[in-house]
Structures are given as structure tokens and as C-alpha cells.
Amino acid sequence: MHRFLERGLAALAIGLFASMFVTALHDVSMAWDVWYYHLPFAARIWGIVPATQFVYDPMNQARFDGFPLFGELLQGLLWRVTGRIEAANLVALASVPLFAWVVKRKLGVPAYATVLALLAIPLVQIHATSCYVDLPGNAAMGALVAIAIAAWASEQPVTDRTVALALACAAIAANTKALLHPIVGVALVALAVRVRRRRTLALAALAMPIVFFTPLKNLVLHHNPYYPVAFHLLGVHLPGPDEPYSSSPVWLEHAARPVRFLCSVLEIGARPMGDPHRWTVDQWTPPSAPGYRMGGFFGVYAAACLALFAWLAFRARKERATRAAAVGFGALTAIVSMLPQSHELRYYMGWMMVLVALDLWLLGRRVPRGATWGAAASLAALAAVVVVTRGAYVYPSGESFDELVRAEVSPRAMQSVRDGDRVCVHHAPWNFLWAARFHAPKSYAVTEADAPAECAGARSL
Image (cartoon, rainbow, N blue to C red; front, side, top):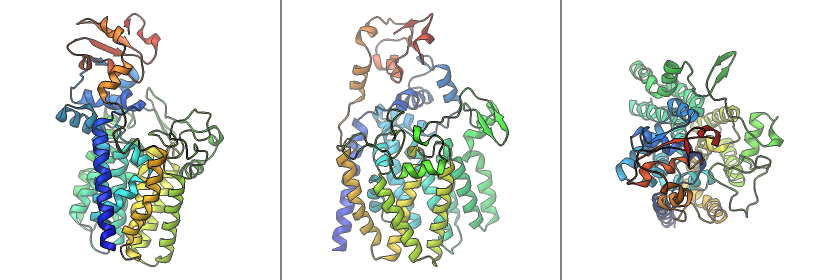
């Protein structure tokens, strides 16, 4: 019976992942940020669409100069190697099995169990076939936290391979999402305390400029580690052309960040379960809506996972491994709940990813084949997410890139463009679709504008 269940769940995980792989290669991302800067940046890095063909508006140029770009670097690489822009989606998709691999290696949880439990998280399932970089960054952060917890759970010395894996995860997370820097820093310190070999610690210290390459680069070039965002902390004010992003539902505007985080985890104010847009890539609703930028973890699933974790931690509270999990996850929760925009859960998906991984791990330690039974239980949440979203993120159901270009670029306007022209476009977030690369054999240059007024004095399309 147990063997049959394991094989069935493994087959389901493989089949679901295969379907999502095909989806990622067919369905082009439609989200705002993908076309506003993720894919334009990926194309610029690899020379696919150089600056001579597509000129950013001043703010986007500042973002390109200062944002962590490791996610876009990988997206552009896959685009360049395959020749398909849709292949950039595979960066996010690959982060799911890679996280599961780390959890299996360090905590002993079967990979299929982790994959199924992760895909039951709405934001993970949605982001897995998108070109956002939140999932890759958070998967790396979550893997780093799992490594640190595993190090404290064992009495064995931390190996050099473990430290190397942790540093790789830290570098990916820190150079993909700046909001993850506090978590990365604390996790590295926690792991360092468990390292006994001075040589290993010295080599790890030498790797810190790589781990925190982006803020160090910005500090040298722009005198602000978080350029282009102005940095304000403890009386220190470092200028930048952009102000820190701050937005929340009206009813939570004056609430403390931990309160916002809890309300978002429980999905208070979210759209009804019957609404196929209850969960989206960025949880957007009209700003006046109570669920604006809220939710994404499936409140019932999150509450059940938290309750299971609390029960498992209490029942085995005297065990070293359980204490490590409780302290580690408690510290992660405390940090995440205090970070900027803590209620926008896509920024901090790693919190929920670590929670489900720890549940499977502790359940497996207490119950024979507990991780398998936990994965089987998560199928109820996974099925609910697929039903609510109409399965839009697990099978090819969207547009291809060519279809998107035909839908968003005016054929009449393109007919007026001649070789050698310099034109200005203000059709955010679709400005990038007007680049000459996507309208061969024409050769011309595009300058993007954030508003029509910015095209003054230039030929506007």
C-alpha cells in the first residue's frame, strides 16, 4: 500500500511538472513587470535587444544600473540558447525541483512530496511558469534557511560542501531580490556559528563580495547599496531617483507590518473562492479593494500547515532537530513579518516554502512514511488551487509570444516605420514589443516613454 502510494504520488508530481514544463515553453508571461523590465533587462544583458535598438526611459535605465539582475541573467541565457523568448519562464520553473533537491539532500524529504506540497501554494504554482524572479530568489533563500536549520539539527560538523551549497544559495538569493538580504545575512551568521573549521570560515568570508555583489557594486558606483531606491535607515539617508515602494489596502494602512503579514497569510479580505482571479501573479486588485496585494498562500492551507507545525514541534519539543526547526522558523517568521511590504507575499514566498518543507520533515520523523502522507494530504489544497484558477497555470492555455505581439502592436503604426527611424513609444508595459528585433527585417530604434509627454519632440507611435 505504502509503495503504491509513493509511486502514485511520484508519478503525479512528474506528470504535473511535465505539463507545466510544456506550459512554460508555450504560454508567454502576461504580467506587467515581465515586459516593463524583466525581459527587456534580460535582452540587454545578452545583447539580444541592445541599447541601440531599445532605449529605456530614465527610471528604467536607473533600475537596470542598480537592481539585482541574476534572475534576468539566467532568463536571457535561456532565451539566447534556445532562441525562444518563452524559455525564460524555465528559470522560475527550475527553482521548484532544485529547492526539492536541497530539501531531500539536507532533510531527507522525498522530492516528489516537496514538489506536490509546493505546487499547492497558489503563488508558487502561478510563478512557476512566469518570468517573475520572486520564485527563484525565494527558492534560493528557502534552501539556505533549510540548510542552516539542518546544520543545527545535527550534531555532526558542518562540511565544506554544505558551506559551499549555502553560499551558492545565498549568492543567488541576494543577487536576485534585494528584499531578501536581511534573511540571507541572518541565515549565514546562524550557519557560521555551527562551522568549526577556521579555514572554512575564512574561505566563506572571502566569498562575501560575491554573495553581496550587487549592493557592494552599487555602493561603489552610486554611493547607495540599494540604488536606484533612496535608502533611509537610522538617520542615514542615501539618495536615489526612486523612493521606497509602499502600498497597502486602505484598512491596513496604519497597521503594523506583522499584523499586515498575518492578515495576508490568512487571506483576510481576499476575493471569493469561486473567483478565478482570487490568486494572480502579483495579487493585484483595485487599490480600494480589501484584498489589494494580499494573500497568495491559500489561507486554509497556510493555517493547516502552521497548526501541524505547532503540533509537531510541541510533541517532540525535547528533540534537537525539532528545536532547531522551531527556532529557525520562528526567526524566519519574525524577520519576514517586519520587512517592507510584508503583506505582499510574492516577495517572501520562501517563508511558506520553508514551512511546508519543515512539516514534511518533522512528520516523517514522527510517523512512518509521514512525508508521503503529508504530500497526499496536500493534494486537496493543490486540487482546490487548480479548480479555482481553472488550471490556467498547469497546462498550455495562454498566448504565444507571436500572438502577444500581434495583439499589442498596431500593424498600422508599424507600417509607417522606415529603416533608420528613431521612434518613441508609450504603451507600458508593452513598449518592449515594439523593438525592431520582433519586426524583422525592419531596422530602427525605439525610445520608451513612461507617459506621452515624454515623447515631446520625437515621433510617437
